[in-house]
Amino acid sequence: RRVSIMSVKTITGSALLLAIALLSQGFLRMIIPMHGLVQFLVGSIVGACTALATWRYGLWSGFVVACVTPLMAFLQGMLTIPLFVPVVAIGSMAYAITVKVLGTKRVWMTAITGAIIKSVVLYGLFLALFKLMPGIPEAMQKGILFSMGWPQLITGSCGIFLAAFIAKRGGIKLQKHD
Image (cartoon, rainbow, N blue to C red; front, side, top):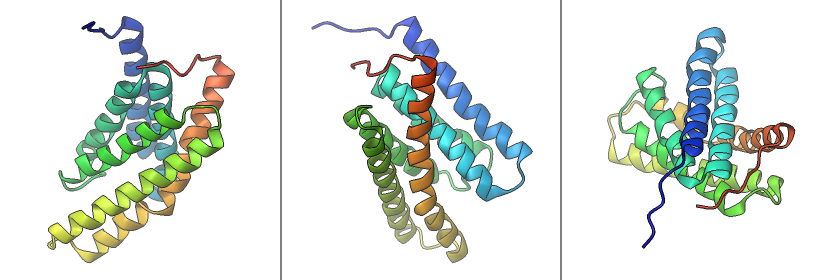
């Protein structure tokens, strides 16, 4: 059985996309005081980084972005309860899987499907979590469930369109096979 080792190019490219995602989370939250606008900008940039990492470097690279960004959001106070981290990571991993499976042939189909799957997974997992943790204030539950609804549809689809635009304009070769 052949064991493949990630190339330096894959590790470096994945790290660069993760750094862009993390910087956008921290920097944009500092300079833009309006939470709603920040969610749309940061969500779209993180989605684009997840899609680019997945398309260019493979599913595991997309998973790195998908899992590290909610951890950083928790450390920045954007996710207030530690159990929210794996829930958001799972939603983002579902997004990366969709991006990988559907690819770049029909970007609009990938954008719509990826956004819907991510939103449904996040909404469903948070709904289940709130049933298991009845102590979470109702106002917080409503705010989070709202954020996991149509805003995720917007940021998820914008992330994929942004990734496709960057790849095309930058001449980035996509669809590396795992």
